[in-house]
Image 1 (tube, each protein chain N blue to C red):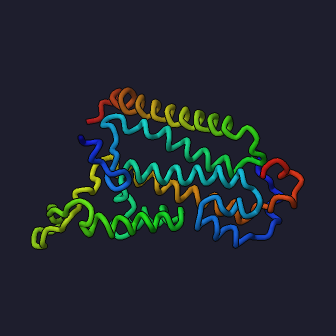
Image 2: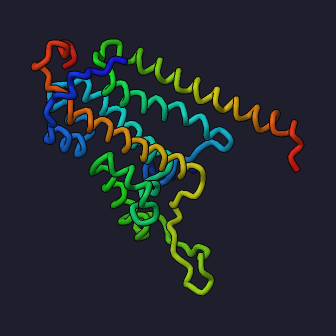
Length: 160
Length: 82
Protein backbone atom coordinates (compact mmCIF):
# COMPACT_ATOMS: atom_id res chain seq x y z
CA UNK A 1 0.00 0.00 0.00
CA UNK A 2 1.67 3.18 -1.13
CA UNK A 3 -0.94 5.69 -0.01
CA UNK A 4 0.36 8.72 1.85
CA UNK A 5 -1.45 8.69 5.19
CA UNK A 6 0.08 12.09 6.07
CA UNK A 7 -2.52 13.53 3.69
CA UNK A 8 -5.21 12.80 6.27
CA UNK A 9 -4.08 15.89 8.20
CA UNK A 10 -4.06 18.00 5.06
CA UNK A 11 -6.68 20.79 4.82
CA UNK A 12 -9.27 20.44 2.08
CA UNK A 13 -8.48 22.23 -1.18
CA UNK A 14 -11.97 23.11 -2.39
CA UNK A 15 -10.71 25.23 -5.28
CA UNK A 16 -8.74 22.30 -6.67
CA UNK A 17 -11.76 20.02 -6.30
CA UNK A 18 -14.07 22.41 -8.16
CA UNK A 19 -11.48 22.91 -10.88
CA UNK A 20 -11.06 19.13 -11.09
CA UNK A 21 -14.78 18.77 -11.76
CA UNK A 22 -14.80 21.51 -14.39
CA UNK A 23 -11.82 19.94 -16.17
CA UNK A 24 -10.63 16.51 -15.02
CA UNK A 25 -7.04 16.60 -13.75
CA UNK A 26 -6.91 20.40 -13.42
CA UNK A 27 -7.19 20.16 -9.64
CA UNK A 28 -3.87 18.32 -9.46
CA UNK A 29 -2.29 20.63 -12.02
CA UNK A 30 -3.38 23.66 -9.97
CA UNK A 31 -1.70 22.28 -6.86
CA UNK A 32 1.54 21.71 -8.76
CA UNK A 33 1.18 17.99 -9.55
CA UNK A 34 1.26 18.53 -13.28
CA UNK A 35 2.16 15.03 -14.47
CA UNK A 36 -0.37 13.48 -12.15
CA UNK A 37 -3.00 15.88 -13.44
CA UNK A 38 -2.20 15.27 -17.09
CA UNK A 39 -2.32 11.50 -16.59
CA UNK A 40 -5.68 11.79 -14.83
CA UNK A 41 -6.93 13.98 -17.64
CA UNK A 42 -5.82 11.45 -20.26
CA UNK A 43 -7.58 8.64 -18.38
CA UNK A 44 -10.87 10.45 -17.79
CA UNK A 45 -11.20 12.13 -21.17
CA UNK A 46 -10.00 8.95 -22.88
CA UNK A 47 -12.74 6.92 -21.22
CA UNK A 48 -15.47 9.49 -21.82
CA UNK A 49 -14.61 10.20 -25.45
CA UNK A 50 -14.22 6.47 -26.16
CA UNK A 51 -17.69 5.92 -24.71
CA UNK A 52 -19.25 8.62 -26.87
CA UNK A 53 -17.35 7.33 -29.90
CA UNK A 54 -18.55 3.75 -29.36
CA UNK A 55 -22.15 4.47 -28.39
CA UNK A 56 -22.72 7.87 -29.94
CA UNK A 57 -23.78 10.96 -28.07
CA UNK A 58 -27.08 9.21 -27.34
CA UNK A 59 -25.45 7.23 -24.51
CA UNK A 60 -25.46 10.40 -22.37
CA UNK A 61 -29.14 11.12 -21.73
CA UNK A 62 -30.27 13.00 -18.64
CA UNK A 63 -34.01 12.53 -19.24
CA UNK A 64 -34.10 8.85 -20.30
CA UNK A 65 -31.26 7.44 -18.19
CA UNK A 66 -31.08 9.70 -15.12
CA UNK A 67 -29.29 7.19 -12.89
CA UNK A 68 -26.54 6.64 -15.45
CA UNK A 69 -26.33 10.38 -15.95
CA UNK A 70 -25.66 10.97 -12.24
CA UNK A 71 -22.50 8.88 -12.62
CA UNK A 72 -21.60 10.45 -15.98
CA UNK A 73 -22.02 13.96 -14.56
CA UNK A 74 -18.91 13.32 -12.45
CA UNK A 75 -16.93 14.04 -15.61
CA UNK A 76 -18.05 17.66 -15.43
CA UNK A 77 -19.38 20.04 -18.09
CA UNK A 78 -18.42 17.67 -20.92
CA UNK A 79 -21.21 15.31 -19.78
CA UNK A 80 -23.73 18.16 -19.80
CA UNK A 81 -22.45 19.20 -23.25
CA UNK A 82 -22.97 15.65 -24.53
CA UNK A 83 -26.49 15.59 -23.07
CA UNK A 84 -27.19 18.98 -24.64
CA UNK A 85 -25.93 17.68 -28.01
CA UNK A 86 -28.15 14.62 -27.65
CA UNK A 87 -31.24 16.67 -26.87
CA UNK A 88 -30.49 19.54 -29.25
CA UNK A 89 -29.26 17.60 -32.26
CA UNK A 90 -30.58 14.03 -32.16
CA UNK A 91 -33.85 14.27 -30.26
CA UNK A 92 -34.87 17.45 -32.07
CA UNK A 93 -34.23 15.83 -35.44
CA UNK A 94 -31.67 18.44 -36.54
CA UNK A 95 -29.29 15.57 -37.31
CA UNK A 96 -30.77 12.34 -38.64
CA UNK A 97 -34.49 11.72 -38.93
CA UNK A 98 -37.25 11.24 -36.39
CA UNK A 99 -39.26 8.08 -36.92
CA UNK A 100 -42.16 6.59 -35.02
CA UNK A 101 -41.26 3.87 -32.55
CA UNK A 102 -43.57 1.30 -30.94
CA UNK A 103 -45.35 2.92 -27.97
CA UNK A 104 -45.05 1.36 -24.53
CA UNK A 105 -48.76 2.11 -24.03
CA UNK A 106 -50.92 1.21 -27.10
CA UNK A 107 -53.43 3.98 -26.27
CA UNK A 108 -50.71 6.62 -26.54
CA UNK A 109 -49.36 8.17 -29.70
CA UNK A 110 -46.15 6.47 -30.91
CA UNK A 111 -43.12 8.42 -29.68
CA UNK A 112 -40.63 9.81 -32.15
CA UNK A 113 -37.11 8.46 -32.08
CA UNK A 114 -33.97 9.56 -33.90
CA UNK A 115 -32.58 7.22 -36.52
CA UNK A 116 -29.20 7.87 -34.85
CA UNK A 117 -30.40 6.42 -31.54
CA UNK A 118 -28.26 3.52 -30.42
CA UNK A 119 -30.25 0.42 -29.52
CA UNK A 120 -27.57 -2.24 -29.69
CA UNK A 121 -24.91 -3.39 -27.20
CA UNK A 122 -22.88 -0.36 -28.35
CA UNK A 123 -25.25 1.83 -26.33
CA UNK A 124 -24.68 -0.21 -23.18
CA UNK A 125 -20.91 -0.25 -23.62
CA UNK A 126 -20.79 3.48 -24.40
CA UNK A 127 -22.97 4.30 -21.40
CA UNK A 128 -20.73 2.20 -19.17
CA UNK A 129 -17.55 3.89 -20.44
CA UNK A 130 -18.99 7.37 -19.78
CA UNK A 131 -20.33 6.40 -16.36
CA UNK A 132 -17.00 4.93 -15.29
CA UNK A 133 -15.24 8.07 -16.53
CA UNK A 134 -17.50 10.09 -14.23
CA UNK A 135 -16.95 7.80 -11.25
CA UNK A 136 -13.18 7.78 -11.77
CA UNK A 137 -13.19 11.58 -11.95
CA UNK A 138 -14.87 11.65 -8.55
CA UNK A 139 -11.88 9.64 -7.27
CA UNK A 140 -9.56 12.16 -8.95
CA UNK A 141 -11.52 15.07 -7.41
CA UNK A 142 -11.22 13.56 -3.93
CA UNK A 143 -7.50 13.16 -4.54
CA UNK A 144 -7.21 16.84 -5.51
CA UNK A 145 -9.23 17.76 -2.43
CA UNK A 146 -6.72 16.18 -0.05
CA UNK A 147 -3.42 16.20 -1.93
CA UNK A 148 -0.70 18.36 -0.46
CA UNK A 149 0.37 21.06 -2.95
CA UNK A 150 3.74 20.34 -4.58
CA UNK A 151 6.64 22.14 -2.98
CA UNK A 152 5.26 21.74 0.55
CA UNK A 153 6.37 18.13 0.75
CA UNK A 154 9.79 16.62 0.17
CA UNK A 155 8.22 13.42 -1.14
CA UNK A 156 6.61 15.18 -4.10
CA UNK A 157 9.95 16.01 -5.69
CA UNK A 158 10.02 14.85 -9.28
CA UNK A 159 6.25 14.59 -9.42
CA UNK A 160 5.61 17.91 -11.09
CA UNK B 1 -19.78 4.13 -48.34
CA UNK B 2 -21.09 3.36 -44.88
CA UNK B 3 -17.87 4.55 -43.25
CA UNK B 4 -17.87 7.77 -45.29
CA UNK B 5 -21.42 8.54 -44.11
CA UNK B 6 -20.56 7.87 -40.48
CA UNK B 7 -20.54 10.96 -38.23
CA UNK B 8 -18.20 10.29 -35.26
CA UNK B 9 -19.65 11.00 -31.81
CA UNK B 10 -23.16 11.52 -33.19
CA UNK B 11 -23.59 8.08 -34.68
CA UNK B 12 -22.32 5.06 -32.76
CA UNK B 13 -19.15 3.41 -34.00
CA UNK B 14 -20.75 0.16 -32.96
CA UNK B 15 -19.36 -2.96 -31.41
CA UNK B 16 -18.39 -6.12 -33.29
CA UNK B 17 -21.11 -8.65 -32.54
CA UNK B 18 -19.92 -11.48 -30.26
CA UNK B 19 -16.69 -9.56 -29.59
CA UNK B 20 -18.10 -6.80 -27.39
CA UNK B 21 -15.97 -8.13 -24.52
CA UNK B 22 -12.81 -6.99 -26.34
CA UNK B 23 -13.80 -3.46 -25.32
CA UNK B 24 -13.06 -4.48 -21.74
CA UNK B 25 -9.33 -4.00 -22.47
CA UNK B 26 -9.38 -0.27 -23.28
CA UNK B 27 -11.93 0.24 -20.50
CA UNK B 28 -9.66 -1.31 -17.89
CA UNK B 29 -6.68 0.55 -19.36
CA UNK B 30 -8.46 3.91 -18.99
CA UNK B 31 -9.51 3.13 -15.43
CA UNK B 32 -5.94 2.05 -14.63
CA UNK B 33 -4.52 5.37 -15.86
CA UNK B 34 -6.85 7.41 -13.63
CA UNK B 35 -6.43 5.05 -10.69
CA UNK B 36 -2.63 4.88 -10.75
CA UNK B 37 -2.36 8.64 -11.29
CA UNK B 38 -4.09 9.25 -7.97
CA UNK B 39 -3.16 6.20 -5.93
CA UNK B 40 0.63 5.97 -6.19
CA UNK B 41 2.91 7.95 -3.93
CA UNK B 42 5.33 8.43 -6.80
CA UNK B 43 4.48 8.39 -10.49
CA UNK B 44 7.86 7.15 -11.67
CA UNK B 45 7.52 4.25 -14.14
CA UNK B 46 3.89 5.29 -14.56
CA UNK B 47 3.12 3.43 -17.80
CA UNK B 48 4.77 0.26 -16.53
CA UNK B 49 2.56 0.34 -13.42
CA UNK B 50 -0.53 1.08 -15.53
CA UNK B 51 0.24 -1.87 -17.84
CA UNK B 52 0.80 -4.16 -14.88
CA UNK B 53 -2.41 -3.07 -13.18
CA UNK B 54 -4.33 -3.51 -16.45
CA UNK B 55 -2.92 -7.01 -16.95
CA UNK B 56 -3.69 -8.03 -13.36
CA UNK B 57 -7.26 -6.69 -13.56
CA UNK B 58 -7.96 -8.45 -16.85
CA UNK B 59 -6.44 -11.66 -15.53
CA UNK B 60 -8.61 -11.46 -12.41
CA UNK B 61 -11.79 -10.83 -14.40
CA UNK B 62 -10.87 -13.56 -16.90
CA UNK B 63 -10.32 -16.01 -14.05
CA UNK B 64 -13.65 -15.08 -12.52
CA UNK B 65 -15.36 -15.58 -15.89
CA UNK B 66 -13.70 -19.00 -16.21
CA UNK B 67 -14.86 -20.03 -12.73
CA UNK B 68 -18.41 -18.92 -13.50
CA UNK B 69 -18.30 -20.78 -16.83
CA UNK B 70 -17.19 -23.99 -15.12
CA UNK B 71 -19.83 -23.54 -12.43
CA UNK B 72 -22.68 -22.98 -14.87
CA UNK B 73 -21.75 -25.53 -17.55
CA UNK B 74 -20.02 -28.25 -15.46
CA UNK B 75 -21.03 -28.08 -11.80
CA UNK B 76 -24.73 -27.23 -12.07
CA UNK B 77 -25.51 -30.00 -14.65
CA UNK B 78 -24.11 -32.56 -12.18
CA UNK B 79 -27.08 -31.91 -9.90
CA UNK B 80 -29.60 -32.53 -12.73
CA UNK B 81 -31.78 -29.62 -11.64
CA UNK B 82 -35.26 -29.95 -13.21
